[in-house]
Length: 209
Ligand SMILES: Nc1ncnc2c1ncn2[C@@H]1O[C@H](COP(=O)(O)OP(=O)(O)OP(=O)(O)O)[C@@H](O)[C@H]1O
Image: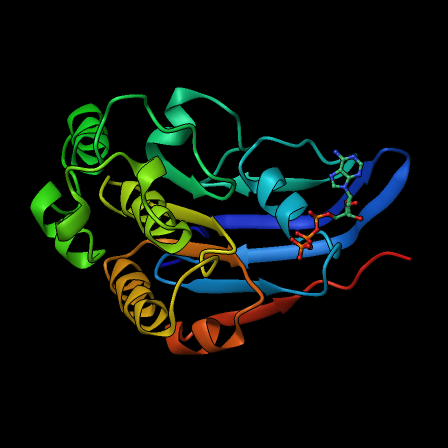
């Protein structure tokens, strides 16, 4: 039986501001696979993730995510979770309430809020507003909101941002477990240790000169 790839992207070409950013980029990810996109600053990792998320349209090439071209629609986002730039935190809602908002909206969460607070080591910060946390703690809230809800694909842009070494090891475990349960992960990262700890397949992007 052939397993449909979660992502099949072929010959992607993107120009931004009149400059070539991606050329002849291919990327696939199967259910249960973790792919780490690596490359120097400006190589186009975030741009590629934006294409996979339907937030950027390549000039040429073909992208299928879960069998269809990615679109910035509610249907698409029910299956796909994205973290990258810091989210806009809701004024007045605590860390716990942010997670409750996500689990209430998406239902059938991958873990309950208590388990998520424990997994992301946020128990002692549950009643605080995210903006009162440290950078790494906020990143953990951001990752928790992506992991607490059901999805079939995780797109993570530099998930290691701000995380200490101990939590990066724990994140590797969390991502491996997500993949074992059939999800696919594509992350742009500068952290080869995280990629290795996840058992990720490396895809290197070369900057277009
Ligand atoms: N909106 C934009 N307009 C013009 N150029 C852009 C735009 N966004 C990104 N670029 C350019 O595209 C190139 C790739 O940027 P991108 O953020 O995808 O790289 P990256 O590999 O994620 O880099 P980093 O490792 O620094 O996060 C860079 O040269 C950047 O200047």
